[in-house]
Amino acid sequence: MNAPLAVSARGITKCFGDVVALDGVDFDVAPGRIHGLAGPNGAGKTTLLGLLLSLAVADEGRLEILGTPVGRALAAPAGVAGFVDGPGLYPSLTARQNLTALARLGGHAVGDVLEQVGLADVADDRVRGFSLGMRQRLGLAAALLTSPRLLVLDEPANGLDPAGKQHVHGVLARLAATGTAVVLSSHRMDDLEALCAEVTILATGRVVFTGPLAKLSAENGELAYRLRTSDPVAARRVLAETRGVRLAGTPRDAEDVVVRALVPALDELVLRLGRDGIAVRELAPVVSPLEAAFLALTEQESRR
Ligand SMILES: Nc1ncnc2c1ncn2[C@@H]1O[C@H](COP(=O)(O)OP(=O)(O)OP(=O)(O)O)[C@@H](O)[C@H]1O
Image (tube, rainbow, N blue to C red; front, side):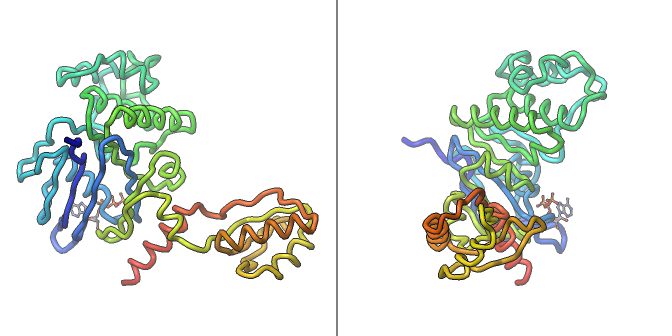
């Protein structure tokens, strides 16, 4: 028999008074997947993560976690770990003492998880003096102690420097490779693109996209690309003559142009430039496909 879905949500609705935080949300995550949750402020991301951690109960809908239907009790099913709104830590204890207090819950050795998140050198320092990024990593270590099969994280890269971020990404990727599902929210589209093969985009409590990132890029259509060539004047002439390519602006650096095109038209432009002896030195989307889709989809929703 196949392993059950880590998360299966159907028609989840959650209100706070008059505010509809989640409105009929359908959402699946398979084991071993890193699933990103994106959406503007107030879209419902934290509310959804809170339901996965059993910090709150949905008003309507059906939620199954690791194959177990979630009832009305505020108790997370076995195998779920994570945190929203920052990890709960004791500032007056050291990193090691914090984890030792939690380690009675089971699983891994404290030293091992401190090593995994890159805090071994500061294990015996008091958490009071920890930076935001260090606290985030310690929160992740606390979650790892229980060997979760579903890990839920709200903005895990918050406060992390680039090296710390890479470290945490590595930890999550290794965890997913062993079959743990990870659901994380982020406002950073580049982080989501680096980590997740699939995303859900929420806007005002509704799912406006859920599925593989590749599908999002394919559906998104025309993107803006920054183009740098060896001969900007001649390049402008070629692009004016190429069907399906539009000049969308000239950035501050006059060497570059911004063009809008679908991928086939862009291919044609590059081939023509080459045939005319104009070298393409740089060609990249101005905003990533995920960011472009995010903006387009969440804008549509807010106009409803
Ligand atoms: N405990 C609460 N009481 C009242 N309203 C709440 C509560 N929690 C969330 N809300 C409201 O529900 C909506 C969704 O909030 P939520 O925090 O889930 O959004 P979010 O996508 O995580 O936002 P952000 O990106 O700003 O963290 C918002 O309108 C918020 O004000």
